[in-house]
Structures are given as C-alpha cells and as structure tokens.
Length: 373
Image 1 (spheres, rainbow, N blue to C red):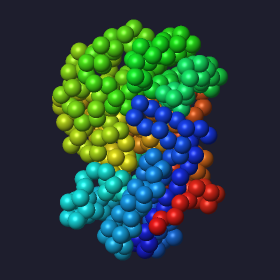
Image 2: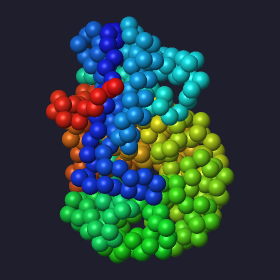
Image 3: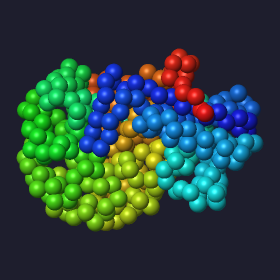
Image 4: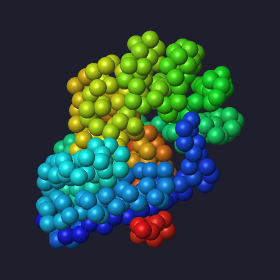
C-alpha cells in the first residue's frame, strides 16, 4: 500500500450555540485542521488537530501538512508509522522552526491518519488493534461541557445536576480562575451541594493562578472533596507545580499544554503531576501519546487524556491502555463523524467501526469546511 495523495482540510464547528470561556480563552467555534491520506488500495485515513478556530493559524497547520509534510509522505507505505513520524519530525527545516506548536500539531494530524489507516486495513477499531482485546474495559466519562467560567452560577449548578442526576455521568469538571478566588470557591461549593457526595468533582484553572494563590485556596477546595485540580499554574513551571503537588492534598492534573514525551518525563520525574493528561494533538499523534501513557504507567500514575474535543481518538487510545480508566466528555464536534463517541450510563460505548473513529461525514465537510487559502 502506498500514499498517493495528501488532502488537508479545515473545519470550524460551532461549540454549544454560545460563547464559552475559561480563565484564559474565549471561543464560539472549535477549529479542526486536519488531513485525509489517500492510498492506492482505495483506503483513506483521516486525522485532525484541535484549535480555537482562528483561520490564519489553522491555515499555517494545513500549510505545513500540504507543503512540508506531503512531499515526505507521497509514495510511502502508511504501515511504517514510526518511520514516517521520525522522517517528518526530524526533517531539518521543520525541526529548526518547531518541535512544538504548528509543526507538531500538523504531525499529530498525520500520525492519527496513519493509525486510522492501519486499523482500517486490519478491519478493526483502533482500540482493539492496539490492545488485542476482544472485549473493551469500562471507561468512565466525566462531563466538562457545563462548567464554563462565563456561565452564571445557577446555570453551572443546573448543568451539573442534569449531567449527574438525569444523564448518568459520575463526574463533572468546573472551570475556575475568576478575579476573586472566593467566587470560584462559592461556585464549586454550590455544585458540590447540588450533586452530593460520591460524584467526582474536578476543577480546572487553565494555568491562571500564581503559586501563592494555589497554596492558599487548594486547602479550601479540598474541603469540598475536589478530585483533582487541573493546570493550576502556568504550563511550563515545573518547580512551582512540584511544590504545589508536595504541599497540597488535592492531586495535580496536567498535560494538555505539553508537547513532547520529554516534557512529560520532566514533570513526572519532578513529582509535579498526579493525573497525566496527554493529548494526541500536542504530542504529535497516537505514536507519542502511547509513549507518554506507558511512562505514566511505569510510575503508577493514572492517565486521563485531555479531550480538547479529541474524544474520537482518545476514546480508542484510552480503551486500549491499562493506565486509563476515565475520559473527558466534550461533545462539540462528535456530530462530524460517522461513529460519534457516545456515553451510556456514565461509561463510553466502545466503538465498533474499523479505524480511529475519525472518519468525517460528507455533511460535516460540506457544512463546516473553510478555505485553505
């Protein structure tokens, strides 16, 4: 089998019908720059990244795929995934301008497409191909899509009650990072009261807090039985995360802003993380994601993949890896796929279609596609 054409694309998909926000970002659409790899066998593999739907930067990702990576892929055997990953990653002009960011996100989309092709060629869903299991393990879902920072407290409470009492979720996550942390605490307390004990309640500061704020407020959050605090501090500050992890009883979760296996290794060695959250987009695909998950398992650390609405791929990788028992649910773009990620009774339904779950519907492409130039 050979790759005969490389087809980049960009989709911009509305999120929840309104603007959503965390402590650092606001958006109305989710960006899906990606690629379809066509082969001489008739099989095609699809991979994509996730962005804040900014067309100029999405075009940079698509341009990297079309102009830098495509010539390195044409005529190659897509089954040689590790070879192709290294070929693109170590291509000197690309390596010189980035081992993270645009080039890494583009490589991630390509790598996912290659794994999608491998699973389709085997006639199996990716989770089954990666794990060699006939039956999938249970994978618990927690819902983030009602706890946005710009929503009123009563709305956040109502969403949490609906998710847990009507829809069967056993965990919810709230965004924190208000100018006054006391307001964050009041929101978390209101949700805990509404959902009761026994339901996982996570919080996510998206890198907003300085260390002293985290040290002051984490004990108060601990009283509300917070399951983890996610990205409490600036993403690259390993010493501060290590100090917080040593001094706080709330486990630290992070990973969505880390771009390499080496980044994760540095945080893990420093004792700066308890819940490891790799993202296939930042980590340049399934290939590097699996390396990070294996590293976490070696250190007895649980893996809870960051969605960034990569739920389709992360559902497969999480079902396949023994370090994974829980996965975030954000359904913004699930309608774009032929087999959308689905939750029943609080657990994800194992996909059955061959591939990585990334095959786009024709309707999604027609409705949400953006011009590449």
